Amino acid sequence: MDFQHEPTLRRYFGVDPANGEMVWVVHADGSIAGISHRVRVSKCEAEVALLVRSDTKGRGIGKQLLQDAIIRSNRDGLTILSGFVLRENREMLGLARSAGFEAKESFGLNIRLELALTTT
Image (cartoon, rainbow, N blue to C red; front, side):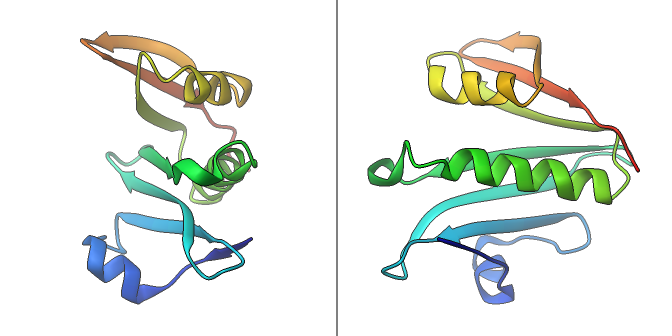
């Protein structure tokens, strides 16, 4: 599977390249297996969202996308990467925690997670 960065798909999803980006993993058959969307919400923070196609889960796609978002956020000089995860999404909560994210707040069914970044 390959990472792709294509302006056409960004345009379809309405991503403003000045404040956000989309990255996706393409399956061998050419279909999209997973997508991450990272949006700068302040000068020092970005929020990330991941989506992995259900029939491709368990293959490391989410981990790959999250690691890429962390690397890009560090590269961009951000100090915080955050995201919201449904409380029932145990797999994503486990993945986020293994990457160093910590639960900060709870909003109904959602948990706000944060990762303190180390800029280089």
